[in-house]
Image 1: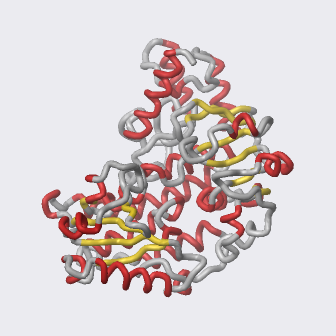
Image 2: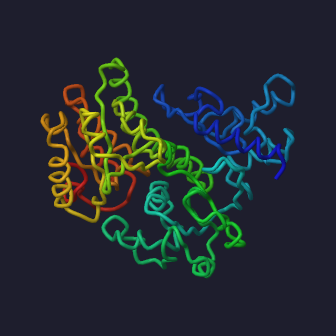
Length: 410
């Protein structure tokens, strides 16, 4: 690999992580008002760096060709290294849903391509399946991993599909036998980095579903891959209306008056930087003491250290949710309360439990709502996290499910 390619990849990673590929988001192409997600659509052809590929990108490229606009990374729509009329043709094809190839930046900051149209998908994680369904494309899923098969309540339409096994050790032969257009998975750091070689003839799509708070970026890119942009923008409008309200209220709290929190899980594992959960707690207005731990995204913490830090809140994240009633949450809550009984969080009844099912993927906003209400009950007296969760199910999941019958938060 040349130094130029390596440098380009590193630059893209840095820009994606910081959410600053083009700075502030331009809301003019969609009716979101001022409630825009502060991310960029990382699809080549998004020349002006907003959330949409549209006529404004064509205008921008014409400006580059004329020498009136500065060249941007994503302006090279066909990824041939040259900004030209061919890029305008590619943008028009993307808009018309006639493009035969789409180029994008994946979760690892690498340039990737997918052949269009995509008619069939194998998904490797519950959250990937959930995102595909939110985009109205569940009918394209023809294969799943073992975990999805264990969620008949949440994935009644998918749980009986052929499985390729463990998502971390996928059976390539089983995937190849299904002959999907796309295998949808995540980062090479967690999932087999050799999949692209093992799955010859299948496009491996690697996008975020929780990492470092980049869920929305992953949803948007996938919507262009699947030709489901309208569904993505419908979801984004719903998402941003709620998120903007939470951020506006939290934004008025001085930094030195914010509550502190420890995110805990089984095995004394905290949620660290890049976990998505840490970032969610900060969006909800807390100072997360997990930032002091530097041993990966799920660092092991010492109980005595946590007691000495005496966080205002402790939230334990466990496996529960759609596959469980409230009992596992009660059992975990009792255990954590006993462990931290001498802390302010226990004395003030500020120890809670969240089901992992609502802490990442397209439903991650539900966990932020719960946390905001726990952190600042007076400020968010009118916020109803369970109602937000039910609305998400009813509007975007296409299933009949009453969230009050399952254990998500306590």
